[in-house]
Length: 231
Length: 243
Image 1 (cartoon, rainbow over the protein chains, first blue to last red):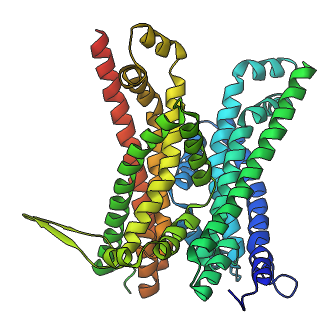
Image 2: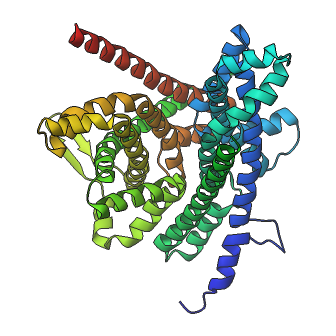
Image 3: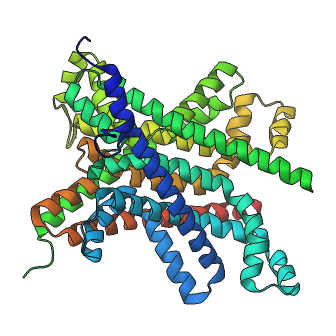
């Protein structure tokens, strides 16, 4: 094991060639997850509200679009964005952006389903009551229905974010230097400790996802108890 | 100018679809059986068994499938004794009358193993949710009738739990088909791999990815249809039973 610099290797896995070059490794995985999580939440919220507000043809079309994104593998969508985005935008799009776009679309499609379900679970009575108080449709949605619906759909948001963190590993396929990519690179260079390397990678992802889940649960519990005491 | 794919490349994509389907069915069958065992283990009275099962679920659900596949493909190969590896890497064929079974390549084997282990954790959780959906009173009623724990599980809890768990199970099978695309990272020649292969050979990216996408959507739709048909026939049987 002599001649092998553990510390700099670990640093490379965590940050990539960061101060000297672009960000990589675990840090890039985190940045990728955070960006696509926010975008997915926004798309999901917009899509869910649109699903709840539209009727007829528009609703059917929207349902079909959501169903399509839910039916294709994330990998396939990454291929599509990787190939289509430069063609459509007429600029050279970095792999990173295409992956963020694909993850946000898939996550958004899944989340719009849960947002729609959350809004539906609040019931017509609340909406009718808000309308009879003189609120407009949008006000009723924003002030009355969504605050309650968010409470219902928070667990599915957390689940979706956890699977987003896991799905960022797919960026490896298009050569984005995130954690899995660097680990694989390291494995190809060393060729001696494949089991240890990938176990380590798995444990790091486990820590990321586990702590995200734990944090979310703690926040939700606190929120629920605050909500309970207010009543 | 020819815009459509040549039959040869279309055949490649079809081969990819067959591999995807075979891999999904193989992993799905094993994951269902193991998921069943896992769900029962999680509700076991023995604390150590229950804890081990929940640790399994935590570990396999919270790490990316891609990393797990890379681990099985590169890591397991290094951990296994060398003569096992040579056995796994050499082709084996079992001729059984007209049917010849060929031992799959190590890529396919690792892909199958990774998908099975990953999906087992999810399917086990769906089974467990189904079992929790059955009211506790049912269990007590079964115990009052003198049934043991396993008899009650077999004849009272599981039949109801299975009905509750069917829709989420279908969702997991859909996820399995989609997840099988990740095995391309370890070189399994399934649908996504083939579409990329066709893309690099023909530069007809749109057609290659388009056909692969359509294949995936059709497969998912078929599972959805199967679910609806199964549920309808189940409901009819239930009504007949009541009448």
